[in-house]
Image (tube, rainbow, N blue to C red; front, side, top):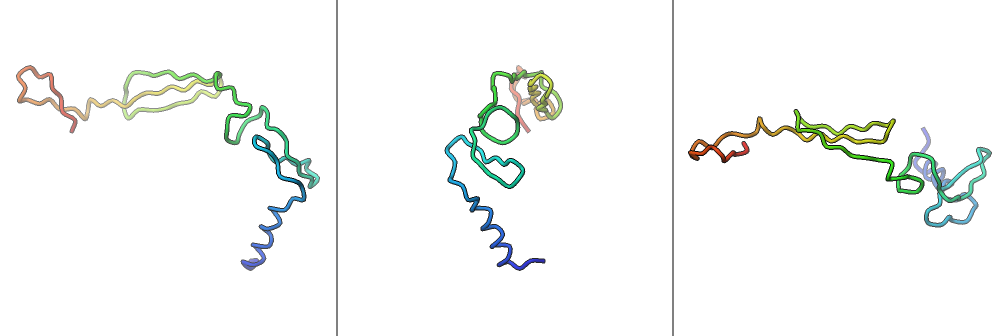
Length: 106
């Protein structure tokens, strides 16, 4: 097991790639032979941010309340389906109301 000092020295090497810093919106790339460059992000998948992501390709549908609720994603067509939880089991009728229109969450 390497010492803490050796680990720190190895981590320091990661911050010195021998190239100038990139610009906002760029990502660090490698050619697989140990050479690093910064390039403008485009297309692809993974990572964060919105570069290359067409947000109009997604859709959301709300289904009827059921069970504990769910949020599902269909990766074939980019659609999300939200099913809110059913709160019926958490309701009780307030019997002091003669019309029985008031419900109380318990």
